[in-house]
Length: 260
Image (cartoon, rainbow, N blue to C red; front, top):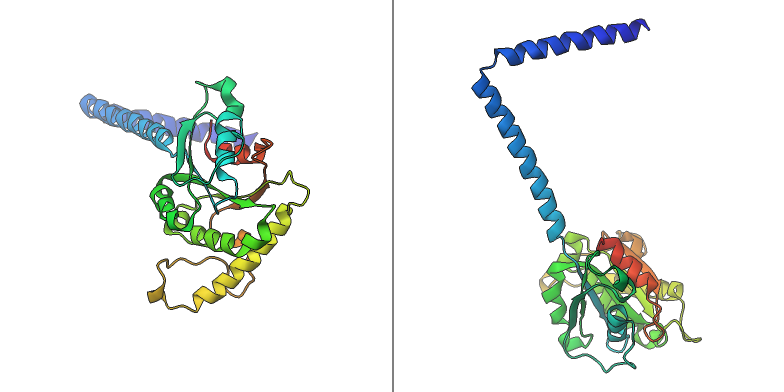
């Protein structure tokens, strides 16, 4: 109780001293100080709101040709596979509320979704969109995975070591598509195989002089076998099926980084 009384007396002393100090300040100076404080507070508030509003809502769908990116794009936009699609030669792009959220249209933030062509000579188009990307969905064909494991791993490696991805720590979802098929590989199998391939790529590319490679960024921890958990950005693994419309895990990933 004595401690509380002491604190009360001390607080009263500070309060009186503060009032006396303020009374000594000329009114014009006091009003000016209050005005500056209010102006700074309002400016800070508006700046925070502006930053929140201008935060990117772009999500990139990337991966090899034939992995099912375009079907997933239509499922997310329309809730339909459009009876399958042909390989895209130009990016499919749109800003919309996810189909599963149509009832919230007007009350929820739309997503700018870009389906980037997976053909090797069209991949430079990915560079055009990476600076504005908030998240990346890298699609892998879980049905025909083994024949494409090396190529898919190389493409993913290039994304994970990209300057924009590393500096901005852009989150990546490794999406195993076509998992509705009985012979499709599991996401754990795909994750482990791709980690092994990327470990090989790390070893082979580290042997190349920096003058011969375009990207100076590396991934992983020196002296340890590569794991996606070693990346500076977050890499998660999920399953989906474009044909059956099973896209919940993709939608959850998108909404984790594109807040409604």
